[in-house]
Length: 284
Ligand code: GDP
Image (tube, rainbow, N blue to C red; front, side, top):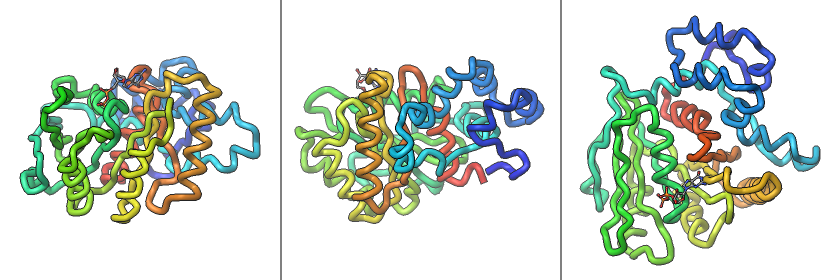
């Protein structure tokens, strides 16, 4: 993370007219993030910190249960994370290979993060949004019924690997469960599992199976709430509070802070990039 002197939390970001100047002096400022900082204040807050944005609509007593700022990167950290996700000559971001079995998985030494979730939860859209600063990357989608679902590996420069796991659902074959389970249990360099939950419908039965798997293997994991643009504020708040309560009372390995995102409006995408960069040791 940035030196304490440079650290500007979400609150202070909006109070500091000089933040753009500060960032433009920094070598690590990404063009994309500089554009975000030029947005009107409220639009910027919604885009960068969707959870803190919903906080405004909560009664004070329910605010206490919501973990909003456990991960609260400075604007400089967000800019650095965007750079990690930007494809350049010196930072190649590429699809590596796919595998149906863990023993076919590429042997990549870097820290790894994986994305799991029910079919249709918005996983491919989210991975595409995360890789929007590397437009050459092709996020493969194999949705045709009967097609073998695979784990897809992407390398992000020399920084880390992103693994797109096949979506699960009630039609998922047993060998798929075996594949995910074996991967989660055996992958040594797996630093964090991102478990996607559709914010419109909340945690479903199949999501619970994935949560139980993460808990059983004592994996550090994070719940990402997808498609937040689809709900009214009231519905989103209700879901956020319910899921937060579940995380607070029923989980051990789940990161206490939720990450709401929209792959349509890009809300929460920068924060998620920063979190990934942080858990893989790229914001130290
Ligand atoms: P996957 O099966 O988990 O990879 O899901 P997809 O990424 O293919 O998304 C499933 C459907 O949800 C598609 O029709 C997407 O366009 C839609 N979708 C995905 N993410 C979002 C989002 O953030 N907002 C909205 N409104 N729709 C989304």
